[in-house]
Amino acid sequence: MRITVTHGGTPKEASAGRMVDPKYWESSVNRAKGNSESARNLNTYLNSIERKVEVIHTELKNLDKEITCESMMNKYQNKGKKNTTFWKYSRNITIKSKLYLVMALRKIRSKVMSPL
Image (cartoon, rainbow, N blue to C red; front, side, top):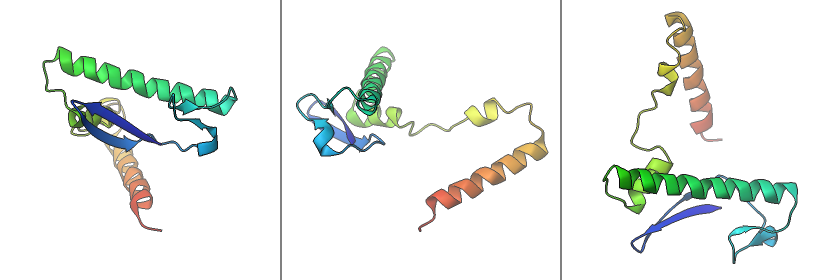
């Protein structure tokens, strides 16, 4: 599934991170068909994406920032910001523990990014 943000006639796409069999998809409403648990979960997920994009649009507007598909999608995907959350909440971890944690994160990233 793809997320498409269109502003001023210009579309920008990104992956929604989910897949759905076309026979379970209702394209006229862009939602999963039926009332099964998986359909409800997927539709709830799609609703949350819509709400997040609406919040991003409102935030950009309130900050008097330029609203473009790219700026909205970048904010949606957290591009352009350094992720400081890890260090912000890990102040009480000793330096040695932080080093092992960083090494573990690098090892995980290399496994995820390495070709099969």
